[in-house]
Amino acid sequence: MDRDIGKPLFDIFLLVASGIGFYYATTLPSITSAGGITPAFFPKLLSGLIFVCAVPCFIRDSLEWLSQRRERDYEAQNVRSDGPKSAVAQWLFIMALIIGYAIIFERLGYLVSTSLFCFLSVLGMVMLSGEFSGMSAVNKLKSGLGYLAFSIILSSSIFFVFTALFNIPLPN
Image 1 (cartoon, rainbow, N blue to C red):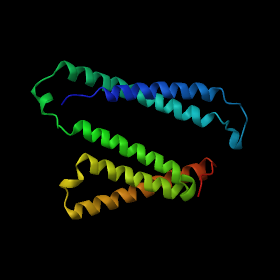
Image 2: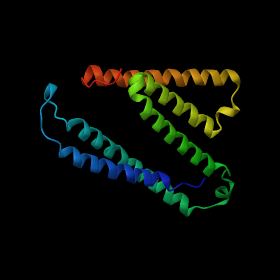
Image 3: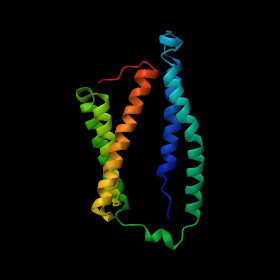
Image 4: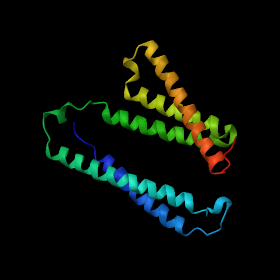
């Protein structure tokens, strides 16, 4: 299978964006809030974590891409013809969901809008990848219920962490 350059490029984007985010987080004023945490703490923490996690991903993805590029063989010709079309459809689908999420976030609150976004993202990506069409009706129902449970648990967990542990209010 031929590796796409997109993964190393995305890793570079994460490295640059997290570096810029960390830099701008250091310019935030040092006003102490509840618990002695400054406003720069969470942006620095998230930027640092993203950077630390993106470095090994960049190394791995770059090495895989370079090795696959050198080893072009007959398998590279057997790539599905709907690959680029499917990737564009998935990208457009996620962009539409992000725009919809931004629109409904204030109206429906964090829990409902994030659960809906997460559920539709997972379901849409599975459907657009073609994995869903090969399943039986029972497996589709089980998968759909699993996606729903995942989205509710994920958004509820994040809501709990931010509201109860960090004392950061999110829209209800």
